[in-house]
Every structure is written in C-alpha cells, then in structure tokens.
Length: 185
Image (tube, rainbow, N blue to C red; front, side):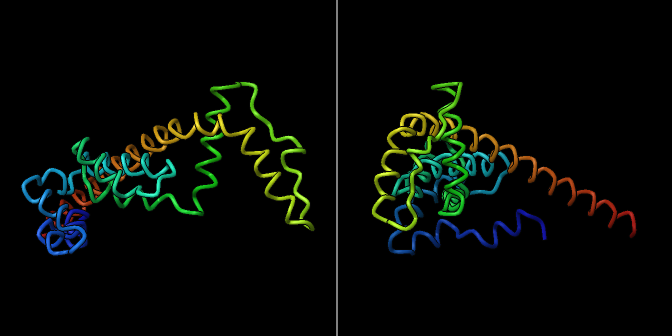
C-alpha cells in the first residue's frame, strides 16, 4: 500500500478531531487549513523536524508546543506531535549526552571531563548519590543549557533529511513497481 494511503488511513481527519472533547479546538482550526494536516513530503519532513526539535527540550507540554510551532511554521501538525514521542526515557540519555558534548565543545573546546569527585557514588550508601549528582549537574549545567538548543537544531535537521529522503525513496520505489506492473501487462 502506498505511503500516502497508509497515512490517510491512520491519521484522523479534522472532522474526527472536532468530535473529540479535548481536541475539538484543533479540529475546528485545522478544517479550513488543510496544508497543516495533509501528508506532503516537505510538510511532513518539516513537521518531524519541528516535533523532534521541540521534543529534545525538556518541557512538560511538548506536544502542545510542537503543535503550536507546527502551525507557526506551516508544517504537518500530526507529524510534529508524533515526533515528540521520539524523546522518551530511553532516548533522553543519548540526546542529553549530545547536548552536553555540543555545549562543552562550544563553551570550552578542551572539553568538560567528569572528575572522580563528581562521580563519587558509593553504591553501598544511597545517601551519597544525591550530593554527587548535584555536584555533577552544577559542573555540567551551563554546557548542557547551551547544548540543548544546539542538539534540537542538529537533531531536527537530521530528522528532516532522513524523513524527506526516506519519503522520496518510497515514492521512487512505488513508481518503479507500478512501471514494472504496467510493462508486464
């Protein structure tokens, strides 16, 4: 099944959203603005990029912020909201590690290394964990704060490129498949 048909099958329509109690406002807003909901390659790729960029920054309302950012950028709202789900407890460690690396690279190119005092965790005494964590965060905090927006831009750009080219590959594959099917007839 082509990707566009699959997307149309799984994505709710603005009319369906208007019937859901908490999302009625979104359905009413999207109905006269189809460019925010249709599955076009560039708009979906931009929606994924916006959603991942917003999802990288630790906010309690990531999906709402991603939807509002998608409306401002005029990209696919559903893709932006769904892309925020890529940041979860399993992916936060590598994402925050990238943010820390980028921030320390910009702030101090020699690098911020964790010292043994920062990581002095006595596993037998859990009471030492919190002070060691606070010491580590206070040393790494500025680099992390600078690196988070940079990680958002980098990961958003990578997400845009991957989504755009993957969609292009699917379209190319479908066209070749259809041409081979026509040649067989």
